Image 1 (cartoon, one colour):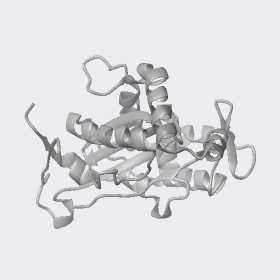
Image 2 (image 1 turned 180 degrees about the vertical axis):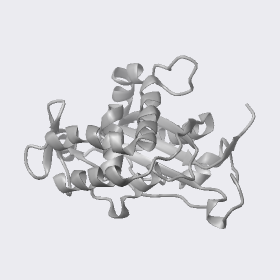
Image 3 (image 1 turned 180 degrees about the horizontal axis):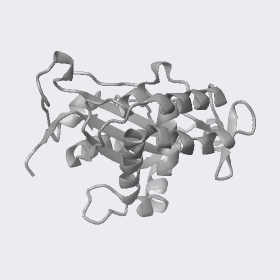
Length: 248
């Protein structure tokens, strides 16, 4: 079983400075998470018609499927990000300055990748995978952590196992038997910005998020979005090649 355990972030400068100055303890983190969830999340968590995802979560999945099905077309859209850089390492979006690690070079590299990439099949939504992703979002909202291992020690396959079973899609090779992965974006609250962040994969060696987005073995995805006390927002996407959900 393969699980992609990587993370990246483009730092939201004013937010990061404020929390570093506060040196938040557990009470501050918990209070901040509760306030964010109460004040800002209702619109994002509003369920889409007939969906287990919220409206924003559905938009993230749709955006991922757009880039999977038409990478060359998406390369042109990614140019909006390049044009928003005000210097080599900082770009502006919605009036906020974001600091990157690699700068505009990472965006250029992502555009070049998309122009040569082959389309892969779109992902179907999975309620079980969405619940597994939501477990991590809630854990990090309450405790302020980052990364793919929750405070209880659970990794993506273990969280997925709470809601179903990873099953072999076919038996062509051992590597394809139970493909599973997870990607995380911090600090963004729009689907386009979230997916662009995962595709550029600034500061992540090997571009693990991008490789996961374009992995042909994945056919299912579950998305979860919620507040984060340090970075504002967390978006987690759990991916699987085949997943048999538990009976409700």
